[in-house]
Image 1 (spheres, one colour):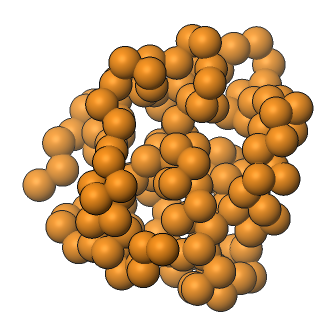
Image 2 (cartoon, rainbow, N blue to C red; image 1 turned 90 degrees about the vertical axis):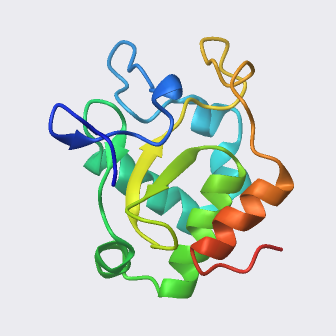
Length: 142
């Protein structure tokens, strides 16, 4: 069972909750300035924007993959590849609704390299951990 905070599912990485600064909201200008948009490609960028627009005050979104594919008008395969890219680059985290479930709580993470981020001190997943996560989501880790 997913732990709940204030009657909402707990984000997968509560130690890395983003804190919007100034007026930018959930989309940090460094996504462009530091070439993240170019690195992750157009589909992952579209998914990141969708998750940002749908995010609550903690940067968490509860949209399922079916709803994302309909909204973005991309295939499930394209969506899975985009989400895998965002996970691999540590721009998002996922807490599945239950083991092996492809959907759950998606959380926007601080931009890697952010001096205000606690990501450097937080445990980082190993390649084996990430591969296990991707396999549990029905993705083929490459």
